[in-house]
Image (cartoon, rainbow, N blue to C red; front, top):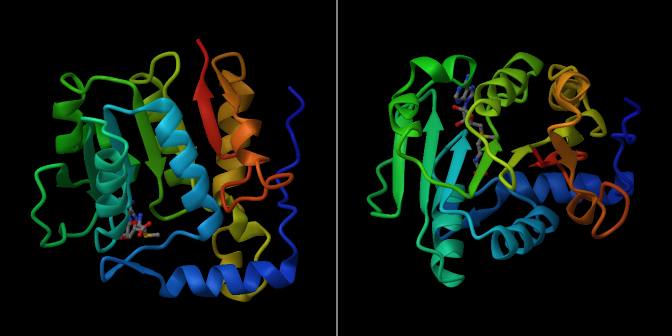
Length: 216
Ligand SMILES: C[S@@+](CC[C@H](N)C(=O)[O-])C[C@H]1O[C@@H](n2cnc3c(N)ncnc32)[C@H](O)[C@@H]1O
């Protein structure tokens, strides 16, 4: 299968500012590692999908879980956020959010796995953990068995390959390579949602070719 290009059309100079700002950004006073482009794209997706479950892998301090929960409330969606991290959960008490400890590389051994049976769709999964190839691919493979037609899985931060600087080389293009590998095998089950990835321009997102919709 011939895949779309993964490089982003965000100009390199703009990318530096967007990335530096995203690393400093907070939501309700809590670190929130998202950029304004993908915040806008997620809002569009949430409104259209109306997920009953948002499953985020990579909690950090819980800012994104809070933001997703608030978006659900704003849109009047009676959904729930599950946020999983290898580290201890943050001390945030919110009935709309369940924080769980677990390893992206072995979600089948995590407490999330015990809950999956009871989780109803539509489901939005967000992989935002280590951005290493193995973790991104493990998350894709794990959720493949749990997603149904219409659900989404977002593989975050393929943009690391476009970012200048030695610290970004350690990711070795992990998210993009994982999406490529996964779609090699499952290309008839998913489509890259270009209406999201290209909304502001060709892959004008930190998640190039990263918004995947299950179509079968
Ligand atoms: C980029 S941060 C998450 C940012 C957060 N989603 C946000 O938008 O504010 C990555 C998180 O992934 C977690 N992490 C790293 N490797 C992991 C793994 N193998 N399994 C689960 N979480 C992992 C780290 O502990 C860190 O909290």
